[in-house]
Structures are given as C-alpha cells and as structure tokens.
Length: 365
Image (cartoon, rainbow, N blue to C red; front, side, top):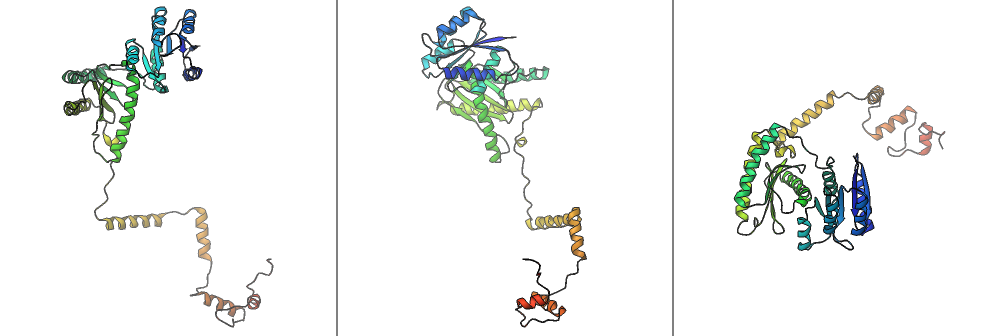
C-alpha cells in the first residue's frame, strides 16, 4: 500500500538528506514530496492525502507546530515528526504538547528517525522489531508490571520501564514527560548498558552491579542494569536531589533484586559469564604444571606424522654418509690425504692446493 510523506524544511541539504534516508527503506512503497515553506506544504497537502508529515520547527511564514495543526485539519490520520535545533524550553513545551509522533534534535539520529517513520507508517521497525506475546510472556508482563507500578507509586515517579538489551520495553508503569523522545532516549541508554557490560567484564566482576544517574532536565533518570539482558529505567521529578538520592538508589537496587528474581523464576536468565567467561586459575605448583606441559608437548612431537615432503627429506638425510669429523681442521686434513696432498699449515690452504685437490669447480664463473 502506498504511503505519502511530505518533507518540509527551508534548507535544501536537509530535504535531500531526509529523502535519501527514506529511500533507503526496503520493501516499502513511499511517495515523497518536498516543500521549502509552510505555505507550499499546505499546497501539497491539498493535492495529496498525507500519511506522514516531517517538518522543521522553524519555517518561513509559520512554525512547524502551526503547520502540523493545519495539516491535521485536512488529514486527521496524518502522523507528525518534528525536527528542531531549538533549545528554548517554551518552544520545546509547545512541540511536546502538540502531540507529535516524535521530536528529533539536529543532527538527526538516523536509526531512530527511521524507526519512528516505520512505526508511524505501520511498517516493520528496522531496529526495534515487534515481539509476539505468548501466554507466558503476558504473565511475565503482569507480574513485572505490579513491581514497577508499586515502585512508581512509592517514589512518585513518572515512569518505570523494564527494557531488554534490544531496546524494547518489556514492562512499564507510567510514561515519560516527553513520550515523543522515548525511542531516542532508550537507544542512547542501551549504549550505556552495553558499555557497562564491557566495564564489568574488564573489571572481572561476577555480577553486574552498577547504576547511572542523570539529574535535572525534564526528569531525573535512574538507569540500572538488572543483568546483561535487561535494565530498569526510572524517570521522575526530584529523584536525584541531595535529600532523595540515597533513598531512590536504595529503592532501585531493591527493585532490581525483585525483578531479577521474578525473571529467574520464569526461566529468564542473563548471567554475566555469558559475556565474560571465567578464566581458569593457574595451578599453585607452577613447576609441576610446566613439566607436565613439556611432557605433553614431547609426546605430541613423538607421535606427530611428518608431511610427505618432510618425510622424504629426513629419509634422504639418514641415507647420506657424512664423515664423522670432530672439527673443521679434521675435515680439511682428511680431504687433503684423500688427494695425496697435505696442507703446509693446518690453518691455511692455498688456492693452488685447493685446485689440485679438486675442491674448486673450474666450470663456474
């Protein structure tokens, strides 16, 4: 089924980038239109049914939010993605309250952008594929949701999420203040999660025991890995203030233990050694171990079968009769006696003597 996307930005480079990015989607039937201003975008919307509007916030003549409302008046089912370089809180609040599908700051994170596009148009997501829920999964969600809901109520949090290592929310209670930033935020936190696993591995930790705190902004965030496969995200006001931080962290650690226990009871495990294999300790008796290693090496050498070429060379070397001389001088003395000549000095052999003994190849130049 064909989907119509309208791109609106007064910068041609941005329009070109967005078009090329959308055209990279496979197995999709997209028809893409472009407009450099809100007025021209409205003209395009009068000609075509718009399924997805992707617009900059700052436009000539009107804002992206104003354009969004006008487009939705004509096409109520249209999804909206806003792009902005604005950092002013008032403008951001306006975008959040407008009800856009997603809001992206410049520079645009393209993987998250494509995911939002595919979710908005009903395509299969590129990086966060949907999961089919069976009865066991549904039961797990119900049990975990109770734990998350209780914690949210106790700590007056806006949202508590259980996220898997692919960035999918497996259980949730509440929602973020800016739900349109959910995909981008979780994607960034997954990078922190994987970095935590690597740090734990290099630190030779038996268990994954860490947490990450982000204070201020729209929410205070507490991000705490449960195991290599899952992590918890807690978002809300005043969670990381000086008077509340210890209580929040202790509560989050207790929640982690409860969630980990619930997952294990349902056969969901994610032990740290799956990414950080334990190293076998060296034997206490290093000398004995080294001797054993050398013995094993000698046995391997004794039983090794040489390659055909090597076997032939060894046989050839065995068949040759090499004079059993004890030194270089003995060799030269024996060579001289065989030709009826003895060197005038045990250490010197003249060119003439060597020629008479037939030691020189006169045919070579």
